[in-house]
Image 1 (tube, helix red, strand yellow):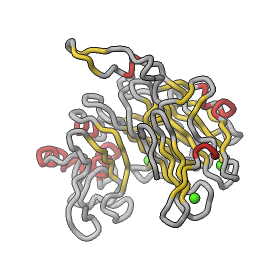
Image 2: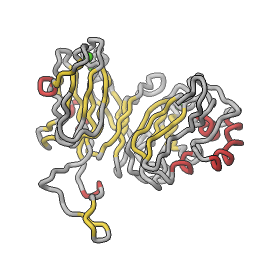
Image 3: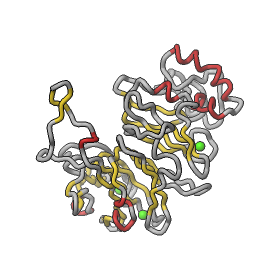
Image 4: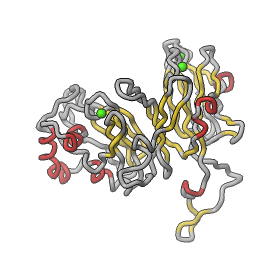
Length: 335
Ligand SMILES: [Ca+2]
Ligand SMILES: [Ca+2]
Ligand SMILES: [Ca+2]
C-alpha cells in the first residue's frame, strides 16, 4: 500500500462485495482507492475506478473525509467525498498573526461542493454529483455521517463544515438529494451561529429510535448535540451538559458509542457526566440520577457517562487530551 500526497482521512468498506474490506483515502492532491486482494495485499485501483477526486471545474479538490453508503439500494456501496476549500501552493496568500507568517483562516478561501459517486458494480464509479443535486451546495466540509431514519423522516447523510453552516442531505430515493439543514435545525447552533465543525456522528443517543447528531469543534465553540425530534432537530448542547464540558477543548474526530457494552436504556449509580475531571463529576452526578427517571436533559448527561451508564456515550479526540467519558478497567469496560 503505497500512499500518495497528503492523506486527510480514511473510509473502509467492501465496495465490490467480495468479502474483503477495501480502503478509500481522501487527500489534498491525491485520493486513493485500495482494493483488498484478500491475501494481505492491496492494489491501487483509483484510476480504473474513476475515484481520483478530480473535478472537471475545480481540478483535484482538497478532500478531507469520505463515506460509503448505498443511496439507491442496489446492494452496492456508493461513495460520498467531502471537500474542504479551494487551495493550491500557487494561489496561497500570506496571512499573519502578530506580524508572523501563519496559516490562513478557512475564511480566506472559497469553499467546494462535495462529490457523490455511484457504484456501477463492475469496479467503476460514475460521478453523479451534479445529477444528484449534491454539487449545488458549496461548503467547507470536514466530516460526514449517515443515518437512515425511515421510521420517521428519511435523512440520509450529514456533512459538517468548518466555519460554514452544516448541511443535511435528505435522500429523495429517486437519485437526488435535498439539502434541509436550515429547515431541520442543524445548520447552525442554538445561538444561530456556525462553528468550526470538524468531526460528526449520527446515532441515537437517547434510545428513542431516532438518530441524533453530535459535532466536534474548536475551543470556545462547544460541540453541538442535536436531538432528533422526528420532524426536526433540537440543539440540546447546553441542556445536556456538553456545552460546559466541551467549551475548553478543540476536537476533530467524533463518535457515539456504547462504551461499557452493557446494552441500551439502563442507568447505573456509577453514571458520570461527559467529563474526565472529578470536579465536574461531582457537580453533575445528581443530574445523572435524575436521568434514570427519564428526564431528557439530564438523561444526556447519563447517556454520556462512563463506567456503567449502560447507554451510548459521546467521545472525541482532542488537542488537549480530552477523551470523553472516563474508562475504567474491568470486565467488558477495559480500555
Ligand atoms: Ca472488497
Ligand atoms: Ca448503490
Ligand atoms: Ca434519538
